[in-house]
Length: 296
Image 1 (tube, rainbow, N blue to C red):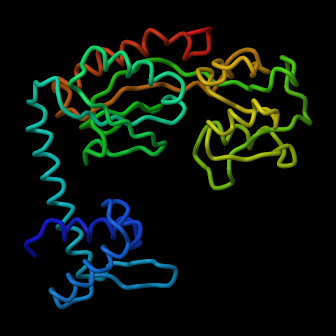
Image 2: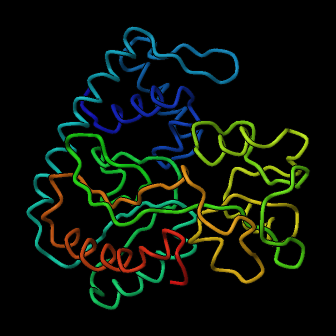
Image 3: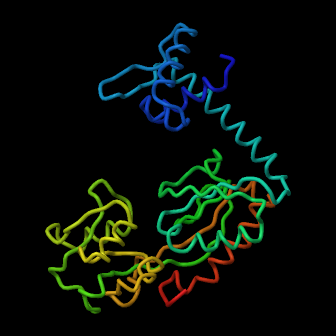
């Protein structure tokens, strides 16, 4: 097999468990992935995937071997890219940053504008995604996360604590304790492992949940429209006068940490250092607001 793109195709399909998912990961359409996989299997003379009901593609023994080889090649290529990139002292080029939708919506864009003014030669590519993208595989160069990095090859800095509390439409709800029969905006039933979603589930009966959404921005919008009360990060809920805090203080136990993270191999890259300095320090300056202690 002499084509790295063929290896990437097999690896992407194996990771996604579907042809469509693999195609999406590579930025190609379904028919192109289908044609390329069939051509590769014909060339090798073996089946790399079993086609199962529901569109599932399960690797055969040969497919697993090819995917494992592709992963090793990918790891080596990523390490080489980080090693070379880590020596880059230019303040020009692209910088791929990932953050949650709420942070991008409310605070981050202002800091990115400051960064742009200071370094117009750097093009920031912002990936708004609530998933934890892999910095080792260069899915992003820098991540803003609400979890402390645990991988030994990552370098990070805590910027602030993030407070959460209950908000409702100012025209409909009064501040104070939340009445037992209050209409609540919750998360979709498919959401698990998110502290805010678990907190809502533990404290409110299912019949109180009048609306569900997997997007915090949509929950924020729904609360403004008066659909019910929403549990929101203070840096989001405090930005709109149409909302008021129903529970005046940030809720104990829901505070999260905001971290700025990169791969250790990239921490001395000029673009990464500049981002840490300008955007990181800008968010540190707003730490009181992020904690829920007042206006930014």
